[in-house]
Image 1 (cartoon, rainbow, N blue to C red):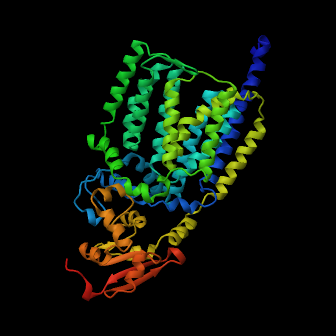
Image 2 (cartoon, one colour; image 1 turned 135 degrees about the horizontal axis):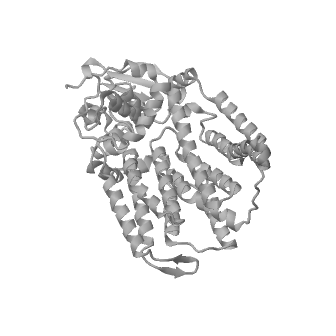
Image 3 (cartoon, rainbow, N blue to C red; image 1 turned 90 degrees about the vertical axis):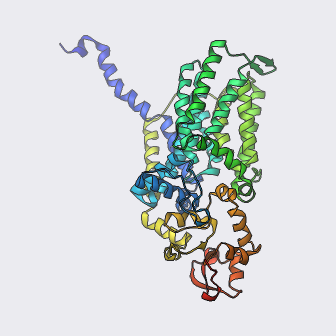
Length: 509
C-alpha cells in the first residue's frame, strides 16, 4: 500500500518541504544581501569608476611582494626594491593578505584586482549584516544598520590588505558576542584566529587589546545607573586569562618571529609624515558624508537608549568609545568603528524603536530582485581591455617601460610601487614608515619641494628624474643647466616628464 495513503500527513509534508526550502533560499535576506552588494559597489566606486581601484599605489608593491613569495618561494627579509635602501633589513608584515590579491591578479589580470576589491568589501559588509541579524533578530533593523555601516566602510575600500584583517576583527566580535550568550567554549577559537590575523595585518594587536579590555572590564563588579557589570566567576576568569595567554603566544607563530609582532609599534613611531600628508589619516571631518553618518549613528544609539534604556556592560561602552575615538582621530578608522558599533545599532534600533516584525516574504520577488542585481553586476563588470586602457591613462606605462635597471631614477612615491612591480629600482614608494625610518622620506620631500634639491640629487647620484609636470621640481629642472627632458607622457595634470642629466653634469658614481 502507498505510504502516503497510510499516513495522510506525509504527502503534505513532502509537498511542503520544497516550498519551505524555497522560502528559506529566496527569503528577505536574499533581497537585503543583493541590495547591500549593489550599494557596496556603487558607494565604493567599483560599479561606476572601476579604474579607481587601480589608483591605489600600495597594490603594486603588494603584488610584487606576493610574486616573490609564490614564485621564488621565500619570505622577504632584505629590501627588494628601493636602491636608496639597498641591503637594509625589511620584513613583509602583510604577506598573507597579499596572497589572494596575487592569485586573483595572476588568474584574471587587472580584473582580478577589481574582483578582490569587490569581494573583500562585500564579505566584510555581509559579515556585519549577519552579526546585526544575530544580535537584533530583526531583518529590517539589520539591513538599515548595515547600510549606514557601508557608508562608513566606504572610506577605506579598494585592493587593501587591511580588508581581510577587518574580517578577522568581525570574527573576534562574533566570538565575544557568542560568549555573552553563554557559548564560552567558542572563545578557544581566538588563539588560532590571532595566529592567522597577525600574518594578515598588524591590526591583530588592536584585536588583542580589545580582548584584554573585555577581560579587564569583567574583572570587577560595578553598578551605577544603566552601567551594570558583574565580575567573572573565578573559573571563567581563569579560562579567559588562559585563552588570552594562548592568543599572545599565537602571535609569534609567523615567519618573522618577534619582529612581526613588534613591527606595528615600529610603524606607529614612524607615521608622523603619513599622518601629516595622507588624507585618510586626517581627523574625521563632519562636513564629509562619513562624518555626517558617524554623527547619525551615535545620535541614534543615544536616542534609542533614551527611549528604552537597558543595562550596559563596561566593556560595551569601552568598545564604543574606543571605536569612535579612533574614527574621529583618523578618518580611515570609520571602517573599524562600523565593525564594532553597527551590530549594536541594529540591536538598539529593534529594541527601542519598537520596529514591528514582519515574517511575510515573497520568494518570487526576492529571487527576481537578486537576479536583476546579478545582471547589473555582470553588465558593469569591467573588461580587461577597459582596465588596460585605464592603466595607460592613469600611469606613464611607456615611460616606466623605458627605465633601465642600472639607472638611479628619482620617482614620485605614488609611482614607486608600480616601478617595483615592473622590475625597476625605485627611489621611494608608499611604504612611508620604512623610508621615514632610514631618513630617505625627508630627503625625498626636500628634493620634491625644492629644499636643497640639486645638492641632494648629487648626493644620491640621481641620473634620471621621473616627475609630474606640475611639481616644483619639474619646473626647476626645466630651467637649470645639466638636465634635459627625454620623454613626455600623459595629458593635463597627469603629464609625466622624464629628465636625464647631460653628460657634463653626471655625478661621479
